[in-house]
Image (cartoon, rainbow, N blue to C red; front, top):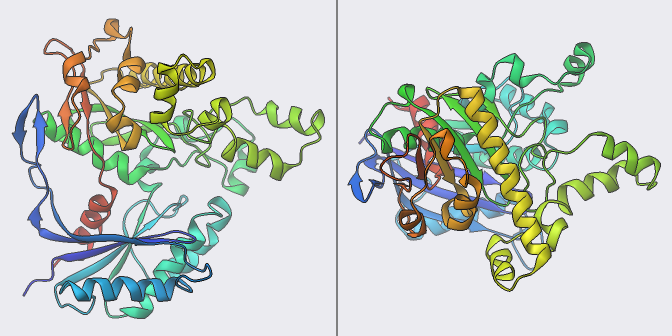
Length: 400
């Protein structure tokens, strides 16, 4: 029996998400203007998924070790136990790989130590990722475990895009550069967009817009990322649910000098009390849409600022790429908000971008084109699947 299953773990500070996928089975179909098309060589049928929440809280599971025990019990009850010989690997999402990790990596003691060294670059995420890795390795020390890094897909950015214009010695000493995030999503969506168009990834230039509570854009030339909106941290770039996105760095100095705010207060402001929630009190685009329908001025302004920033990045990345074949919307807002897609691309007809109002209004769960037949640039809605991307990368590293 050939082992073909991959368990994907996404370990947060108080949660453990999991999915079990069979890499010998095909993944779902995509849709090209209403006609079903296969994913080509993609595979990965989802056998099980779930989440253990409130880890460490009173009345819940005590720690990640107990949480993984819960996962193991749930899978065993469905005949999918972690001791199955069909399990080929465990794939772990790791948020920050720094400059060291730029591809899926087989986990060793040395790799764990290096990921721990990157904690200052991702203090909220990497510690939890490491905890999940350690617990899984203790449970199945005989099984290959693979780390897949959110930053890896963006490691191909040229230095002109990756470096900030500050003193080079200082930047190098403290690892200050643009790393980018949501990389597994951008990788999956850019490749799925090419297949939706019936082309190889190497033939297609795509602007990917990952729009969830966190949001990022990327410019992908021939399957390779050449620019992305997030930087040293996930704060840079687009307007997000609670993050400001791009901002004049001097705002920080101003708030410190004039507002007497310390670093932690400003950090909290820009990461947790800004973006949509800072502008109108809501970070749910559905609620913002409801309020806009009732002529709520603050909700309308928040929406306008959000789509203005999006439009700027679409234009900027069109210039970076030189030729754009497709714009792909993904994640919660990108996949479900026809209003955001339409508003973000409104007025871009001179760039060859024409969205079809009827197609755009149709909701769906598979990848589809929503641009007009005459649009030079395809506009696509492509549901992301980060777990499948992690499973594919992990399996490609360990399969016989």
